[in-house]
View 1 (cartoon, one colour):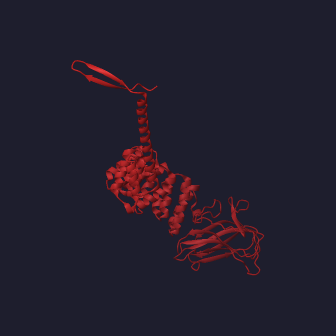
View 2 (cartoon, helix red, strand yellow):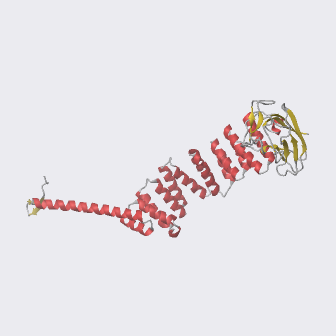
View 3 (cartoon, rainbow, N blue to C red):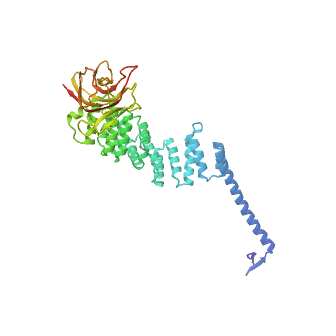
Length: 440
C-alpha cells in the first residue's frame, strides 16, 4: 500500500486558522516515487561509473597526467594519491618532494591506519628534510604494525642515514634477533651505511645475545679481512659447535694472510676447547698419530683420494693409540700421490728431526713411495726426502733438516711417483703412525 500523500495548507484569517487537506491522485503519488527512485539509481550509476573510470585510469596509465585525472574523479581514494605521490617521490624525471608529500599526506588522512602509507609519507618528509616529522611518521607506522618487519627495518635505515649509529645499531639488533636468517643482509646494510667501519659491526656483535648472530658477524668481518676484530668476538662465543666452526674459518683467514703464529695459536685454542688438555709436544705437529677426526684446516692432515689411491684413518692396524693412516693402491700403473700433506709452523734457522713409523703389505722394495719435508713457498729453499722400503713390521723412518732464515712453515708430504715411465707397478697397502717433529 502506498502511504497517504497530501498537501497541508494553512489558511490564515484574522481570528482563526483552518487546515485544508488536498489529497493527491494515486497516479501523481506513483510518479513522484518513481522519479525519486530513478534519481537515486542515476546517482548510484554515476558514482559506480566514476569509480570504475577513475580506478581504470589509475590502473592502466601509471603516469602523472592519468593519475591526476583519476584524482579529480576520485579525490578521496587513498591508493591513487599514494601512486601519484610515489611517482613524484621516486621518479628522477618527475621528482617533486613537495607534491609527493602532499599526496602521501592526503593518502594518510584518508586511511590513517595503513602503516604502509605512513612509511611512504615518512620517506617524503625525509626528502623535504623535515626529519622530526619523518621520525614521528616512522614511529606511527611501527605503532600500527608492531610485529611487522618492514616498519622496523625502515626506521633502522632512517637512523643510520641520520648518522645516529648507536640508535640504529640498537634497532638492527632487535630486528636481527627477531629474524636471524636476515642477519647477513642487515649486516651488509650497516656496512654500507658506515662506509665499511668494522667498529660499528664489532659493537653490534658484542651487544647481541645470540651466539649464532655473533658468529654471523665474525664471518662477515673475516670476509672483509678484519680478522683481529673477528677474533675478539670469537672469544665471546660460548656455543662449542659455533666456536669450532667459526674458529676454523679464522684459522684459514690468518693462514692466507701469512700470519703463521697467530693461526697456530688460534688452532691450539680450538683444539683445547674441542678435546681438553693436550701435551705441548703434541701441539707441535698436531694429530701425528691420526687419533683425532680430521678437520678442514691447514694445521691438520689433508688426505688424498681418487680412483687410483685411497687414504683414510684405520683402527685395525696401528702402532700405538687407536688408529693409524692407511694408504691403499687401487690401480697398479702410473699412480701418483702428491697432495697428502700436513703443514707445520716452525722456527727459522733451526735444526729439526722428523720421525715417523710405517708398515707395508704387498709392496715391492722399489715402490716410489717417500716422505718429504718442503718449504711450500719455495721447494728450492728446503726439500728433504726419505725414500720408503717395504717392511712388513713397524719401522721407523726419519728426516733431519734445518730451516732457512726465510722459512716459517714446512709441509710434510707422503708422495709417490712412478718408478719407471715404461714399467711402473704399485700394489698393496702402507700404514703410517706416530709422526713427531723434534727441534734439535
